[in-house]
Amino acid sequence: MNQKSIFLSFQMLASFKSSSSSSEDATENPPPPPPLCLASSSAATSAAHHLRRLLFTAADFISQSNVSAAQNILSILSSNSSPYGDSTERLVHLFTKALSVRIGLSENTATWTANEMASSSTVFTSSVCKEQFLFRTKNNNNSDLESCYYLWLNQLTPFIRFSHLTANQAILDATETNNGNGALHILDLDISQGLQWPPLMQALAERSSSNPSSTPPPSLRITGCGRDVTVLNRTGDRLTRFANSLGLQFQFHTLVIAEEDLAGLLLQIRLLALSAVQGESIAVNCVHFLHRFFNDDGDMIGHFLSAIKSLNPRIVTMAEREANHGDPSFLTRFSEALDHFMAIFDSLEATLPPNSRERLTLEQRWFGMEILDVVAAEAAERKQRHRRFEVWEEMMKRHGFANVPIGSFAFSQAKLLLRLHYPSEGYNLQFLNDSLFLGWKNRLLFSVSSWK
Image 1 (cartoon, rainbow, N blue to C red):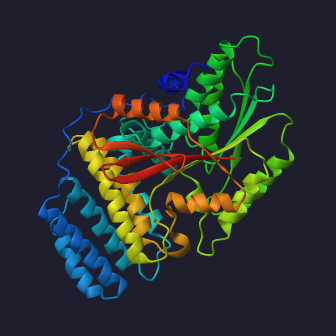
Image 2 (tube, rainbow, N blue to C red):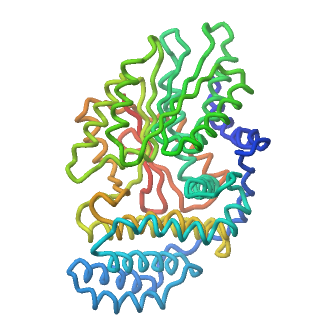
Image 3 (spheres, one colour):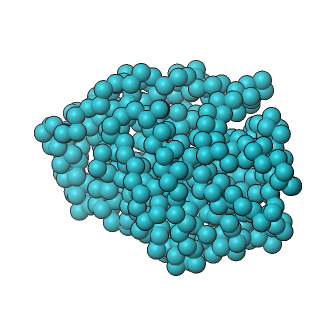
């Protein structure tokens, strides 16, 4: 197939989204990216260093249960930070808030996430998301707000697009020769809005048109997993319409899972293994998903990987944060999160103007929620349990998976993506252990790898 196809078809995403505008459940096309501003200096000011030292000192006091000393420092940090300042001030504002929540809910962390999301709905439903490209629904709810933030994250940062583009190319490479059968079944464990799949659909259609003698024609089946059946149905409808426009044989199946019912998901995966279609190639897509299976006992991730292995997949694609947010030590987790999100906020400052509403929304309502989770929640309430790549590599190999090298063309595509859509000298790409990493300056932020 033409190697340009998967990147060029990435542009088809606009058609995919606009094709749904005629229905009540459609999304509007997102606004064009705001004008870029000059990247800030890589050298942090002495004031920034001082604020970060104070943050860690406050966290240290909290770890020692010295609440009064921590409160004194948090009061200083609160008066010297702002959600509207530079990247350091914005970051310090959110970490100060998270540490304050941790102190206030030290006896009971079970309800902080729900309360924070309720506050988010009140503030942003009318002023930002609904005004721009939030799904048109009769009743806005947390799923709609989360969808809105996810779309902005995909539009304004390279993190999601990098992951999707690289994983798609790995799937295409793995299914280039398909034992004479053009049937591909993708199990997407967190399909969300389905933004990953229109470019791959376009590439499959181009692959078929470039080889008209191949029989049978390619067919694609996607089993999309998610928590909200309404969102899944919308996604399936849009993907079906897009596939029809390409003349692609397509089926979409929903698999609704409750976030707390991971055991139920394992059962569904094992049932899929029993009902697999003969000759159909299976690709399992785990983009920003697997970290949810890390638990304090360490057994859930093993059960999950064993269930995936039972599908005998042609390829398993995995994208994860390059961070150790799952460490049981609060101080280790706090330090990791501070460095990780400092790099992310620095990248936002380099590519979005300070008065950008979209930037403020992402910082407060997407990354802010992640910071709250890492810093303020404990035990089973904590959802952000990211691990570094070497942990994933050891885990995958232990359960019988072998690494499939990410191809050089995927690197070229990711490089082109950054140059065309996120032109900042701060972003960089690295090949490590046959996997592709996206970083900001000297810190790696995300990895994409493939396995079989």
